[in-house]
Image 1: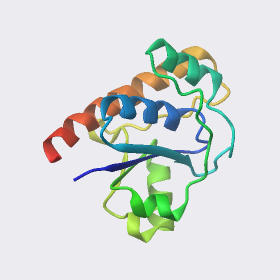
Image 2: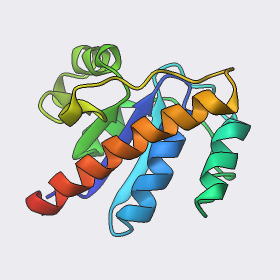
Image 3: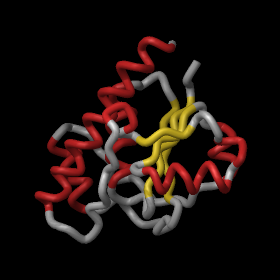
Image 4: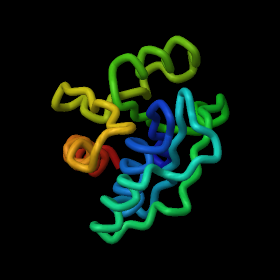
Length: 145
């Protein structure tokens, strides 16, 4: 059973807050949280990320970036990264994570590039990739649980 879903990116202000917001809306019965490998600790989500999510009726304005911690890895039933490099990093740093770390785009075999410090159009492209990954994941979780 999947109860705790951890979403990872680098700064925890762009991609992972978007994915966290989408997953929380789609799976309200699950515990969904996010963190960054190189988190900009305490920073809010990027204004473009907040704007995109507001357009969908999802409020991530209260989000504050936090750094990945070992307790998060231990508690998570599944850990979602944005790219292969992040997946490798987590599996190497946290031996207990093996077998539960996946790229969000794993099922369609793609990475989700970082839109940090780019324009709204790039954030929209990033959102599209995240949303596709979330949809594929939700479909899979429905078959597991």
